[in-house]
Amino acid sequence: MPVASISLARPLEEISDELGRSFGEYGFAVVRDHGIPQDLIDQAEDMAKAFFALPEEVKRGYHIPGGGGARGYTAFGTEIAKDAKVHDLKEFWHVGRTLPAGHRLAAFMAPNVWPAELPGFRETFEQLYLEFEKAGGRILTAIAMHLGLAPDYFVDTVKDGNSVMRLLHYPPLPADAPEGAIRAAAHGDINTITLLLGAEEAGLQLLNKQGEWLNVSPPKGALAVNIGDMLDRLTNSRLRSTTHRVVNPSSERARHSRYSMPFFLHFRPDFLIEALPQCVAPGEVPQPPITAHEFLQKRLREIGLACVALIGPNRFADSVPRGPANRNERGVTPLYVLQRSNGCGGNQLTRLLVFFL
Image (tube, rainbow, N blue to C red):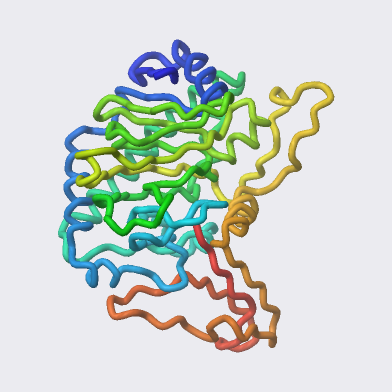
């Protein structure tokens, strides 16, 4: 495996350039000794398997209509990669950041939902979310060192960021799978960096600069870490967001499930992504500045997932709900953020914002 494999237990100044070179060439690195407790990883894996083993009607009860999969459950055969012709062969559950009521960024992040059938599910994944953040922060510190930035440069950029943890289940390959369907079609990640647990199961591949697919196979318990589009843009592609995929297993492994847990670490929504001066060579014209939220919405519109409706006072769109959204039988509310005008009556809708991750 050509990508760097580093221990995060080493001093960061010793590993930062090795890590940075791997991200610059391949967009990927393997990170060992990342500090996420193995017993927590094992517990989370058991919890994820228990959830995906629930009856289909129970799992679908945690799907949020109109939510774009931002929180809760997304069923098998729903997600499709940009430019792909068939859907991916997977199902997943999303956990996002929990913000206190009244937080200035609360409008950008939906509340989490939790399966009542599995005691301890919430506590397990809230703790794993925090551990992913810690490991991701340390990796970003090493990246900052490699780029010649202050070691703490990224701390504020990701504080209260729109990060999402995904629990993934790739079921055994069905006999009636559409021609050309694979577990995850070729795609790039939109976010800042992605930390992936569970990639030791064969299937993850990256596309190198020569157009060749290379296997990424970390040892058990290690992280596969890759650069997302946001960090690619910030560094003017000095660190590469690389196309990757998860291919179908062959022979006997096709009859077995594959589980993994990626953590999509995001900048905070109002962070301005502007190419770093040290990453722009004379004569180069980088992409214009854009906030992380605007970038996210732009990219999601490209793949047909995002919808933002701005509605002025006394004007309504026929295609959107008016008033509080209906809850489903489990009390889950669709991700509609209603902002009402001050002094104009409690029922007057000023803006309806629909946010997808």
